[in-house]
Length: 332
Image (cartoon, rainbow, N blue to C red; front, top):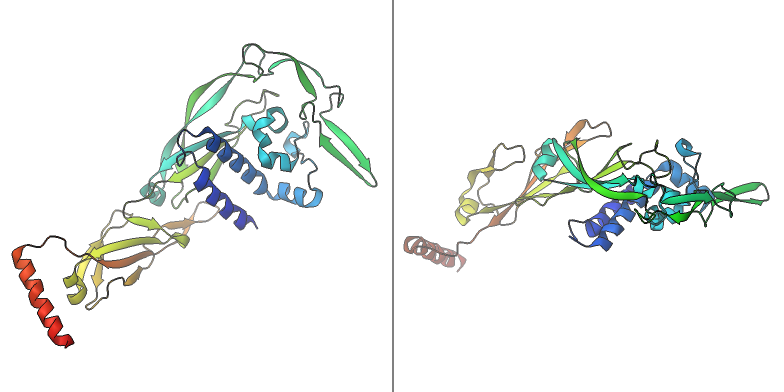
């Protein structure tokens, strides 16, 4: 199901995320493959196509002038190895780190990323191009059988219809002369979840095949761990609150932190046991629907934890000794 694919994507994103593997180019490449695989498998039309036709190429109706490589090729990384067949390098994957407070309130953030600069010597072609002899310039081969006709991407030219015969010396055939830093400000929705990916159509690199075509900019959100709160499913927030022995025995009224910035008054009942759990309704994370409108709130879950003092002054120690004697007497 779409939800299972989404969960699997988030789980793997935690493993391969560049922030978890700083400087590891192999893991970064794996993360790019993961994002592009999710893009395909998360698209209902592409998924229906694969369920019906298997490895037969999927043709995007908005780009039907050029064939794509088949779905399984894209899944296993050819978005990057066969640039001209799959438009892989036209897409830009960027990452933005935010705090849990920013995820709670929603905030405009700035994301920085690298953009390719098209080689001016070959205009992004990678060199001199000639018509592919294997497919006669069509970019695909046709297989006719029974009542079905299937087009498969040409393996010699990777679906372009042309091949480089004289590689550009300036860009070594890549079509890219250099990369430059760029940035974009965009609004984070309140309640955004870790690993969520936002697409900005047409903000990617210029196609080396068609200067009128641009890829997309995909921004993945990474929410940093919080020192007090742990995010739970369904918008719930978990907080472990240290308390003293006297507070558990006698009860107390305390102030709890909340991501809203406001203090919450909370009453510890008399005789509360260590490890007891409490639920504060609708004091957790906001949850928004597909229209980015908040429609409900999670809860704040509180667990009280007895904090045993390590260093006691003389007066405190004598009081504890008296309590210990009383407790021993009551037990016997």
